[in-house]
Amino acid sequence: MFSSAAPPAVHDGHAVDRFVPIASLTKAVTGTVLIQMATAGTLTLDDPVERWLPAVPGTGITLGHLARHTSGLPRLPPGRLSRRDPYAAFDRPALDRLLPRLDGLAERPPGQEEYSNLGYAVLGAALTAASGRTYEELVTEHVLRPLNLTEITANPDPNRRLLPPGRLGRPRRPWTMTGAILPAGGLWATPRAAADLVVRLLVERRLGAPAPSWQTAGPLHWHNGATRDASIFAGGMDDGRWVMIHRLNAPPEDTDRAGMEILKGAGTIPR
Image 1: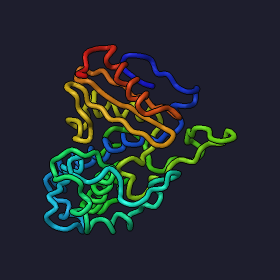
Image 2: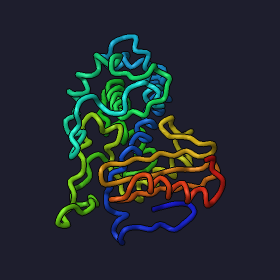
Image 3: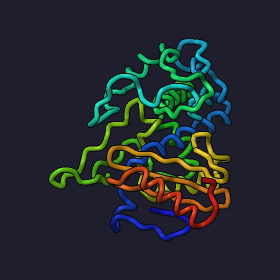
């Protein structure tokens, strides 16, 4: 746990140097890439998805809708997902097969809120199509290098991953999130790098106003995330207070509650 209100508490003396999955906090990185590319004139938030991807024209879905979770697309890709490794089969060819029928997959009209991991997979594909770069290259160019961050990656050294113990005390195998779902939740970071990301995006605002990926509640910008074995909560207040909590083998709702309570303890947050 890192925050502006308390000294960092870590699992052990080496935890800050080990990589952990940051789950849906990845979306804040993806949204920042979108804003930086729009600022550079490569694309606009009003671009229809079919400008960059082979979707059916006339869906009404824009890149801005995807970033704000207002595309109307469902939370998850269609089909049966494995409980053990739900996104392993969702690679780029699987996403490409969905694109021509996005209009049929939408559960709501564009403009209505519907949190969507699928939407962020589509957004990530659009960003790579518009730039001709890989997702990892875009993250490095538009986020990591400008923020002077290095320990955030899609493919950490296996020997530096911090994994929770499973049966017989052996480390549990993490979900496979290096395919099409990567822009929605596949990045890893050291806890210290994740905290630096939050401070530099939400407090120092080195890249401008927070991207539309962040959830807002009055003066608070925040995001959470969870995989099977890890949960994260990150938030920053307009007055400079912030928190980043990452926990292994802990219920996500408890992680969210802890983060909110830390910030509430230092001031007023709308309930």
